Length: 295
Length: 331
Image (cartoon, rainbow over all chains, first blue to last red):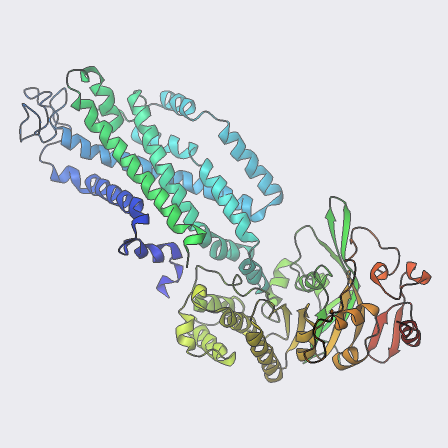
């Protein structure tokens, strides 16, 4: 019974790819974009001929190959100190996605734990959880992130942890609602009537049934985390140079944007497309996993 | 014969905004080994809460008190959480109303049966699976191997209720509490499930507390019946006796509101009971049925006494059995 633990959401995923189902086009496009980005993040730096960190002062601000004055050696051109833009872009995908993933893992853990505790146990526990969520919602996200990063110093782990510790609110709200709804369902009552302990009911009856909403929130939070990291890096308080974060690339390109607009357009478009892809994936998942679309 | 379940003066009270909701008001019940005891009443009469009180599964806010609440020789009132968990599902099992929502949608039927058995018995997965197969066969499911590998949404309502019954019987309980087990099913499936329960009862020596609002179900399946109204048991006796000679005005009204094919004339109105169940917040002054009773008189403002017209037959009303026939004669 190896597939017993597999959530039904995953089992129904193949339905997306049935022919003629245009309603799931968004989901397919989103999955494609995220898939490409993940591929670039994992294998990209090894596949691109150039080193993302090696400057070449003889070849600064070379335009992309498809523009006038471009060279086939640098497909997307070079930046202001001659580093290959394509190499930096795929390396940046690795940074963006790892920030997104780690943030979602940390915040998902915190949010789901709080939400499930509040929703499942109710009463006093729920009051405390609701209070904590309300406090978190009152906190200005960017300001706190800026303050923490400037106090502790900016590095990749610090950014990951800061965002992870701040972005759990939606997880908590959604899991709390789902858990309190599931708590009152018949199969939980049936499990109790069968003599199951609270811990068993929590892990086997409640958790598997909130995987679907959690998956949706996770994608949306991931997009938000990536945007926030770009914003922090743009402000110089995110990922430190010379790491090629897309936010940092945009910041560095600011000085040249009037004469060499592609320098800022390339990382900007990359960021836009990735966040759009993740959001499409999340929206698609939400539609697919919505109760009315179940068999 | 010592009863398998003894309930004396069971009360369930729930604090609400308007005061204290006294949902179950001093219920007495005794279920003998091998007996099906019907508990009948309209919604809100406290049938389900009585069952949940026995199982120790009342809502968090509800408070339970009883003079006696004994299962075989175990005092259920004295048990703490963990001890009660060991009894639930093992020696006392429960089947719920809606089979469509009683199974966890994320696991296969087999996984759920195996887990339930392994919760109470030290058996290996393979052994548990074999016993689940045997139990599914026992409740009349064909191809049990295939069914065990399916998810709940792949089964029909009748099949799911059979699975729920199999799950309840897996540990060989002595008492099965069936809370409206057939209400959500088609009439034909309903009959099959009732027959199945009777078969299993005979084979396993099981006692059943059958809760239903459907007199037809009770008449077909129960040996004895208790009629509940407003949190009290207003009449109790053997099924044949109650249906042949109902004593309490509420029982009479209930029976007359059931359509009997062949007996009702086209265009004639079915009997109905005017009014509705009184609010159960706080204490009731007199007989709870008084405002809706056709035979009510001055004495009904006082609490009704328990009448025992003969052995094993009780009802709660001011009118003695002779008086009742008189009072009804002119009408």
